[in-house]
Length: 370
Image (tube, rainbow, N blue to C red; front, side, top):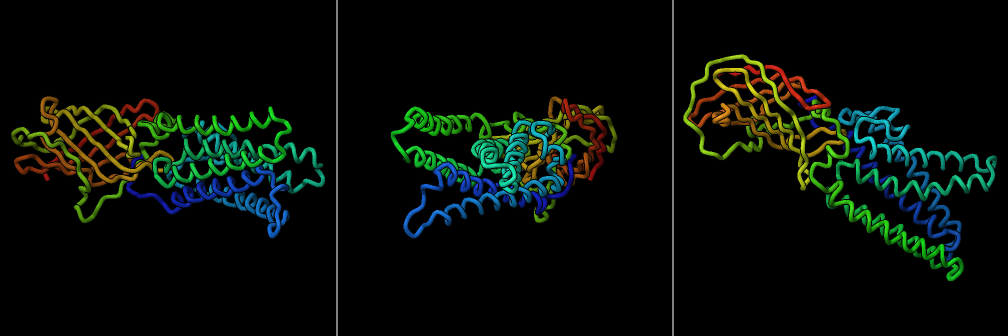
């Protein structure tokens, strides 16, 4: 639902621990792929390299647990315990969140089998350990598809560095022992080139494209949890983006209460900005059209940190008789202040019910001279 709170510290911690986990997992996988037993050299003994590999893996698991816990506790996320354990059952971006759950399960299985390695046997442990190589690309897909920072330059740079590190490790592994098993080595080389190129080609039409939030499976009901931060030094009209069209003559409006119905939708622009658009028909003889737009940064879990807003109310023939901005949000209740070109002011209060599946919206509006 709509709420008047900003992102919590848990939200920032979830994002940070997700990025750190990817870095540590990349270090661990890169050392494993490059075959740490052959990286020993004078002044860099084998046990040192193996220690870095083992400690990076353990630290990745510890940070991952913090990432999962903060995701569950984050009030904006709407992720349940079962969603973090069983892949692809969540309501929020089920495929991409499912990749994260799948990668977490693999990493946990690797850690558990490593603890009981002596009882399990080397062969069984080694077979399980191979899943680490599957865990990493799945984690990369999770970061790209679910992460709220994918359109940030630093996140894209991080993904590039992680991919290049693993590719370099594959090439190093292929170089050891050449030319034995040429077929397998050439296959590994081809995959290390083709898969990153496919990933790069997918990004512009995927997470970097418009409307990714909806296409990725963000439910419309998450609009109800949209949050807003109103700039106090602008009197609650932060960044209003009202229409610049020449306003019609001022119409005197008396106080009224009427029913409203319409639609609520959410789109994401190419620069990562989210726009929530609420378009309503007003059952009144005085005014019959109400349009609310909320702009901001996407929050993990599908919400929006509002940076600006625009509200217009009028008739179908002249929909911007009065325009202004949102001044408050409380659940699915919206309050706004709008003005006409002639200097008349109205206070607008909207109480909505939003269908989480279709986006259909209905409720009441109260309008009074301010």
